[in-house]
Image (cartoon, rainbow, N blue to C red; front, side, top):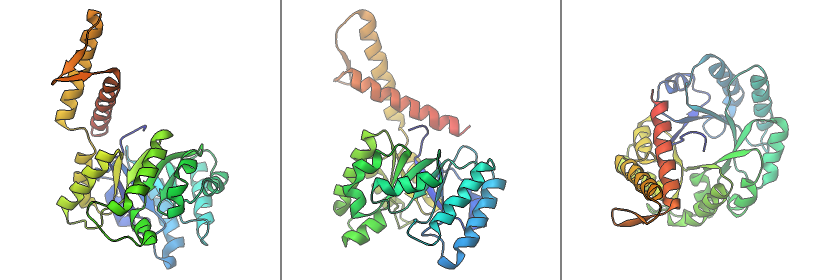
Length: 286
């Protein structure tokens, strides 16, 4: 993961005012959405509105991700062509997110239109879950985003706060992403005024290994940013583990112990990653 992606905010590409506001929001990444958030009659104008925003607005360190329409729609290929033209003109687009990726061939079709750009995949179908490992192996892929609403619809699953019906799919995608060194972002929490429920789902996702959470409203940003950042306790423990391990190495042997637990090299690797993430988050806030 090249940079923190604790909070990944969807912004409708048809809403210029929302994109203007996004310039000052504490989101690690923005998904400029040309797909679900845009009505069919607004698709073409939204593409033009987004083009102007990316050319004229300043989004700082925020990752700029554009979700296009699928190539099985009448808008997908024109979306990709417009982004290719914008990139040729020097417009910063960090990644393109393709919806409903079922197989690696879906990504390849996009890669041929947009060579050289990082691709992200929406993982939101049963076929996508079963093909997660092969999708994750595509050489242009850098991230996966869970589309839990569409997945629940396809599964005909009932809503449960523990997301038990989702666990098989979430786990398959997590394994695939981690095996290939990809960023993986958890799905949205629909009740944007329910901070307690959002926090619980963020904590669950963080415990599972997700790098961040996709969000549908700016009010959700602070909860996600806190949940997916190393806590002060985690930072303190990481420092003490590294110090103890280094001290044992310097003394020529023995076993490093912190808080009554043995510290091995694998714990030090995790500790260094924790400190690196905390430093990256701090640098983004400067």
